[in-house]
Image (cartoon, rainbow, N blue to C red):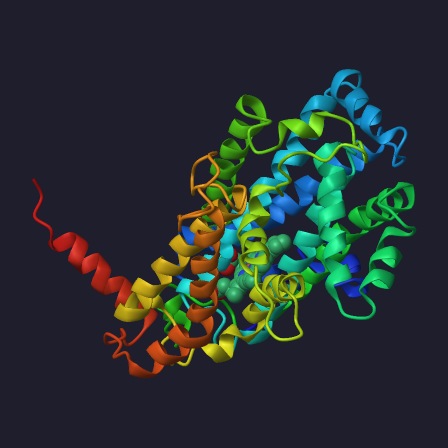
Length: 438
Ligand code: HEM
């Protein structure tokens, strides 16, 4: 359903330019006139919000780099210099640090939206898989960015995560040393992380281009999941969705500004305001909030299975929890896309969302403490510790993808689908106008 353009240059210069580079043709066909289902709700605005956040991160990042020094002796103080001496340096830094969190909030909403409405199903599998690649690049980029201020959590976080690779049999230590560029997390590590942290957002921008291309071949899914049947089901992207996306972007930017101006350190860790010290390990090493569910999965495996030791199994489970997303289009056996018409799936979907939040909490605490408390559990008695919650939620996470989705898709009887998007919209309007006025 790719939009075809009817662009006619209006001026002599426009015509001259168009004959040499028909870029406006592309803009008109793929952005302005692009036929878009007329029933997209606000959950569909997060793609645009993500694109804006990527630009914000690149722009603030490029300016931050003008004052930052990627050297272990100077990195920490160069960040303090940005905060205290550079004009509006505090704003740049808080925008960039909180921008990363906003980016992840938006991407999680975008992913869950896709999971609820079955946007990963045929013919959008490649679009979805490119999305998973984007998510992986985002995770790597944010991880390396967090190391740059060279605070205590930067250093120890880098140490814990790079050390995970040492669990790989035979080559583990060699891989870890190769990542470090030496025999410890040190200046070469900081330098390469800086280089990659600068590079990857541009790679991301390229992959996002592919993502949009892969979107524009089948066109958007929509809340009914029913395919577009003709022109009556769509409206041109502009002005309908430029306005809707524009409004959502403004609201999202206000939310973002709230964090930047009123709680700029709430999502960070106070200990990262202490300079990295390889001789002093913090009592509690935790990643940023957006990694916590995966951190819980990593720590959930505390037992060996045959020759595979717990650490290796934890690493496999953690990477597996993301890799499994690539297979989602084939694990969900239901022919119906939208969760709206799938009564059983819908309930499991919300359980899955709650489970992910619980995993996040499970990743935030010391494993042997009572859940949601700072108190260490009595080791002689069974107790609901962070680790136990992590174990239960990890089991449910994999159960959801490997058992629940395939089985529910086969057993469930979906509700009747509307014949078309237009029918669904009209039915909704009629229902709304049938409500008697007060
Ligand atoms: C930098 C990050 C990303 C950007 C800028 C981005 C951008 C977009 C845009 C503009 C759209 C169309 C509007 C919309 O449906 O919201 C879209 C659709 C979509 N994205 Fe993304 N995306 C990103 C990450 C992801 C990730 C991580 C996934 C999945 C793992 C994903 C999966 C999808 C899917 C399945 C659709 C089609 C939705 C539908 O039509 O129902 N995206 N994306």
